[in-house]
Image (cartoon, rainbow, N blue to C red; front, side, top):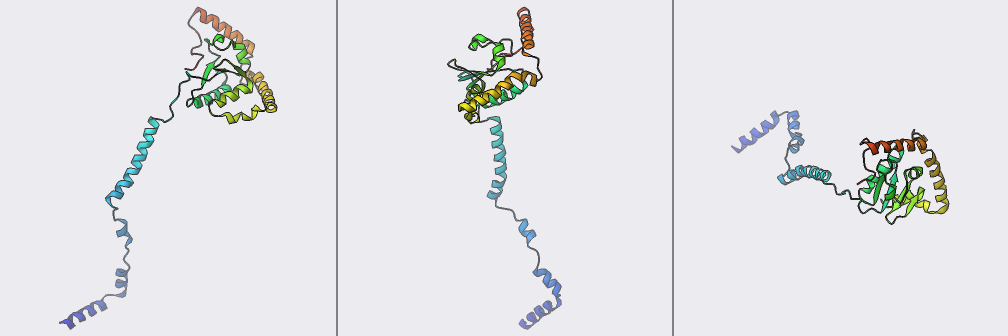
Length: 220
């Protein structure tokens, strides 16, 4: 009986072709391995990670860490011309930076309610001539010195740091003076005399009716 079993096995091996035996020997194992599911705790980890990341990003967008600070405790005022498109690029940049500092109080001299009495007696014509900044103690600064102080109060003091040296400051003031002199022409606006006349007429209209340039001179 044992001999018959051995003979049967031998005959079976002989009947099976080499190609068939080779095929069984080299059956691919990758499909089986590819469909093996990872352990439950691994699956949970992979699924939960992106969900947590999305939730954290959403929470950060809804509740930003940097809150806009009030400018009530301002350290410096910036008198700016709200009708000057090139000037407003810099004003907008400083205003954005000021959200984290709250040190600058922005005053738009182009509005009808601009008050020289609240700004160290600086009238509209004088303010239009060049940049003015006023410290909380009443100190008035102009030209590049004003820019340097404004930038320092929003953490950008390094931009104008080199102008602390007198030769550089003198040169920088000269360059700024040229810009201040021709900025109305460069930005396509009428001469200062015409702007002053139009402002005078507008103030007269405002005194007789409610037709005025809306908006407050001071950013709250």
